[in-house]
View 1 (spheres, rainbow, N blue to C red):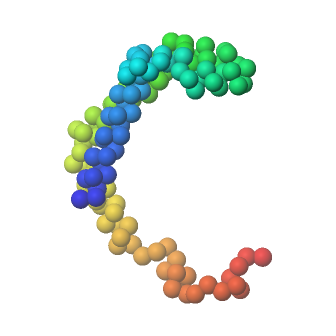
View 2 (cartoon, rainbow, N blue to C red):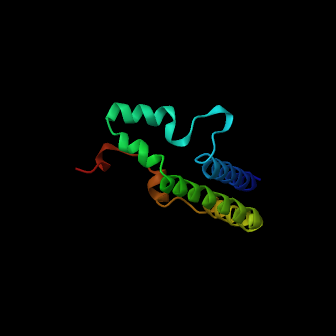
View 3 (tube, one colour):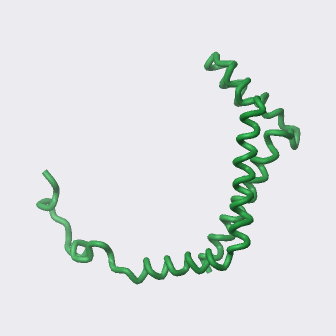
Length: 120
């Protein structure tokens, strides 16, 4: 059950990030300011004295790169939706293998530590 929830939350995260990164650079939803004229970017440009940073972030190149990352996230989300069963099965197998395997140093895990074991 936890493998299914993990995959579902991953899909929701990819969908949300994809939609935000795809549309936010080009639109000003909910009364937010323009992408290149947001409060934090203007404040950073004023504090550092680098107004070229504000112009670079506002450029179409950066907007396109951010949109590309959003489309990549949407692609990942849809790929996970179409391969949901395989991903859940792989996560379940991995969790079962991790639970069945003994610790790497089973002998060291059962022995109490002493100060003589510290490296010098």
